[in-house]
Image 1 (cartoon, rainbow, N blue to C red):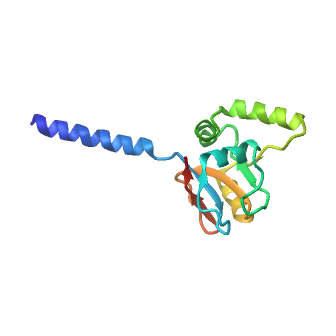
Image 2: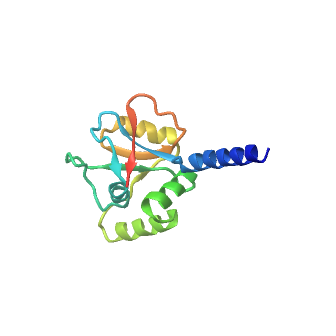
Image 3: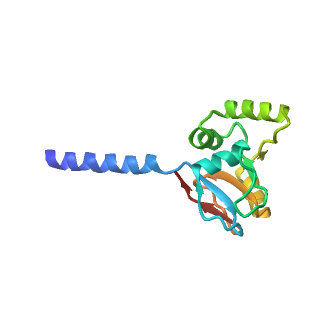
Length: 143
């Protein structure tokens, strides 16, 4: 009996690890965008205004969820390496200095998905469970 409990406990731990390793968000672009994946560093640069163009030349159009969104909080922490408040402060300084404008902020995931569908140069993030529909694709984030 003891062996059965050990095996069961190990299976439960393995499953819990797999679930916690799953991304709580996915990065999305327009289906016509040729980008197939993106590095975390490039994604960070796009959302912090340090890079403003796709490798093919057009201007990147990053789109944020509202500051109150848990998905945005996770994205800011895991990708940008800052809290939502710290990102806001950085953008206020950037705007005040005349060196850029922050990503467009939309109110819902569906608005974000629609905006990405409408713009080949948009990039955004939504919850991992969000249904994308046609015209939008999720791309993997690499280290």
